[in-house]
Length: 358
Ligand SMILES: C[S@@+](CC[C@H](N)C(=O)[O-])C[C@H]1O[C@@H](n2cnc3c(N)ncnc32)[C@H](O)[C@@H]1O
Image (cartoon, rainbow, N blue to C red; front, side):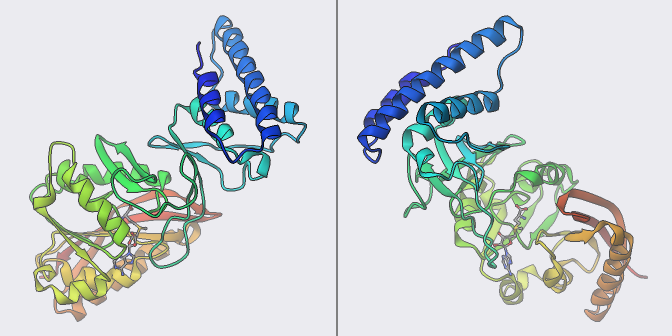
């Protein structure tokens, strides 16, 4: 197995101005040594009939560098993740100065076949749920520019659909992929849908491109997400679907109020807000057709109180619809556990059908 490491290391080493001369030299030796070790290991494992995983290669590389540089081996476990062509380094890994040089990031990127490296970070707790990811290589920090071609702009392909976004501005949640795949299978053909919390279009785009929904009204107040959403609607698998979507940029509590076209208009409403979508429930009541329809209600729920939560939620929707002069019965026909959020707390989605009461 030929690993394209040495060339990548040397190129980056010569292009690196921030490394001090002595560190550069030490690192160059360490990187070369690590490359050799990885090559040898690859040969040994290949002749033994198995290949060293990329994570194993990264570990060997870091261990070799540590030994050569006389610094402690970085403590694992490492959970590297690839988002498009960006290698995501865990938030608290490799934070010591010795690792924070372009040549190290270039080497790790080469191992994983990535072009760029960024450091993961918790989503900010603000209302816009912005990303706090910082670029490590080749760009540094949070770039000033955004949009296609900018340093933080990435594209991931899910279920044949390209989703592009700025990884330094918009959150990406790999754990929700099962729910996004499920959304693409909902029977939405010819339906009108309101996506109250559409983000970059993880549900909106599949509803249109895979489900052939007639129209989606998509609400989002984060301008970086809206920029991505518009791009993702244009580049959907099978062609541009933006003609079947209106994007409402702003607080949905205002936009729903201000746009009568959203009232009594939807066959289906998606309520994808965490930890709770409860603030959007009156909006969903406003948007659903008087003839009824389906709600996808997201919530972080204590697994020990799931049945109670579901009953309470259905009763509360019946109360809200009655108060709005559209009396309906709520029936949950599916409860999906998306992922574990914290001990005992799960992100769940309740699929609830609202049917007018005679
Ligand atoms: C948890 S994200 C979900 C995005 C998308 N549904 C998904 O699963 O990928 C919630 C989104 O709702 C947006 N949001 C939250 N409150 C909002 C409001 N009142 N009006 C419009 N957008 C809102 C946030 O900016 C964020 O993009």
